[in-house]
Length: 133
Ligand code: 5GP
Ligand code: ZN
Image (cartoon, rainbow, N blue to C red; front, side, top):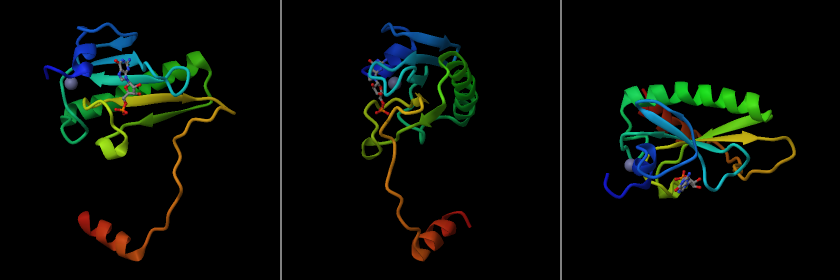
């Protein structure tokens, strides 16, 4: 993808604070961190979102997320960590190259990742269960 900034970062055409790199991924520090250690896992090949991501890379991404989460948690002594992955503008995606956020969480420090719980209606439940029947 010619004009994709994360393609350029993932493939080293634009410099970044790189925590980890292999044939398939680069892991970088987010430029606008939600907390200390906020990192992004970027596949080197372009997929706009999870719907386009090949299964093999999806599987590898989760294993890598586990590894990076462990190193961040051990090294930064955070108290927890969120893994977030946005798909589509309405879901908060701003860069349209698949990426996973790893956001270390520290006791007493607020990060705005919450929602107001709704109620699961019987109609919605049946509709959604039907999708998987
Ligand atoms: P999204 O909102 O698409 O899920 O997340 C995009 C993330 O990429 C944001 O957290 C933003 O701070 C980060 N970001 C955007 N441009 C750059 C960049 O050029 N370099 C780095 N390291 N992070 C970026
Ligand atoms: Zn890209």
